Image (cartoon, rainbow, N blue to C red; front, side):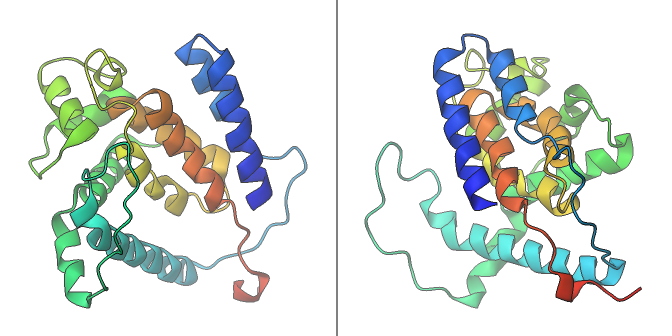
Length: 225
């Protein structure tokens, strides 16, 4: 699966160089995640086990966000060569108000209220109502929507100077978590949210991140029916 992900990224980069239309690039990226024509093996997963895996994944995201928080937006166009600080469990407290996690919860609230076919404009309304701290593409998009500059314009470089940054990539994990083993569905759900604050590399990077979620559930973990 990892090989497929790398191949998809390579195809994306090539197409991005030769395509002139942002819409064409977006459609091409989405097509990379279409489910295989041959139906894959199905593994049953009880709600209890899924919830356990979901909690573990979210805990991992909290740890990652809190560990990397001091380095966020500190290295633009350069490699961070200094060692990362040693981990301390106390750091995880900082993730409670981290925008990467808070934005994901806002996305989830929009899905819960508007359903699986939520539009980017509907989702943007939920972002506009938030009051937690944001920066970069997220904050620019929130200001845009509050100023009646709605998606997809809110995520375009003309209105959002951070449109190609990694904000959406840091939040797109949510769609992989709620769509385990379903990369096409995950990318479909993610697209309306990505348009709010990103475009170009920022948008495509969020969708490509779903490729690494395409890992089959272990047969040993499947409950006996």
